[in-house]
Length: 240
Image (cartoon, rainbow, N blue to C red; front, side):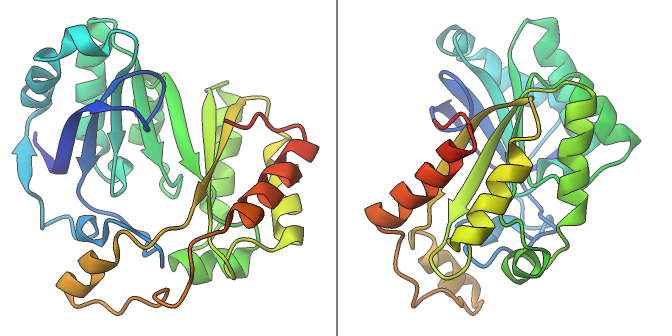
């Protein structure tokens, strides 16, 4: 069994607690308008092919540096490759290494449920709370992701929620209140991160010959970010 991997980094600091070894898996079923890694979409366009054991060997090289952190499997969408992630996480847990998965929550099956048994923390993106706007942003329905967090709540799995703030697409005040109201119903939510939209991935769209629809959108201003954070705080969400 081998995993198709886009890239990896040894000292990630933005993908879970502490210093982390991060694998970015290849392949994604979503087509987010603001995606800064569209080169991860096609699972066949991988840069690395590794067995779980080979991936763990890479982690072992820096094990001393990630003692306070752990490993994160991100994407793309890592749960497109649950067999690989499951076996890799099993190796990590045998060595007492903290495991995190960064997912859209779009996929769920028995194998993924097993992966979650070996997962210490889930980073979950709920990109909009309005179903129509969610589909506009991602080209996929919202309901699977809502079901995903409900399952995580049933198994008492800690979650950090992430919300990408995109002017004109995910900054409407009513939507922000409804998102926060939904999120606040889950005691497993330990942290909420507001991630401002940026244009740093534009060149990748151009290189791939894909039309980038958000070229005219300006990054979220400090005022817009503060407004969203205040709304989330008003619902007693634990902001970063």
